[in-house]
Length: 90
Image (tube, rainbow, N blue to C red; front, side, top):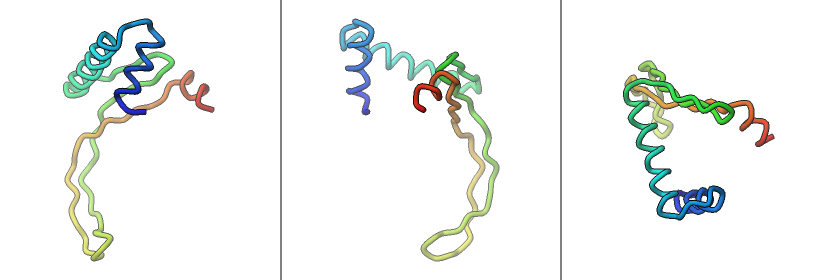
């Protein structure tokens, strides 16, 4: 499902217009991005939670040449599905 299809689904499920659904989705994405940039955790009960964790620097290997390369430390976004979401998928 791409963004346009998600907007259509939100509009049909909620009774909003497509324009309102797009603004709601954009607002959610912007608010989530801002919170994660600050290091906050976002928890939606039943759906899941978004958090930021630090990945340490490590040594990797170039698969074409076999040469070792250094991979820098960075922050990564993680999502952990909630119980209701996990149950609905299974």
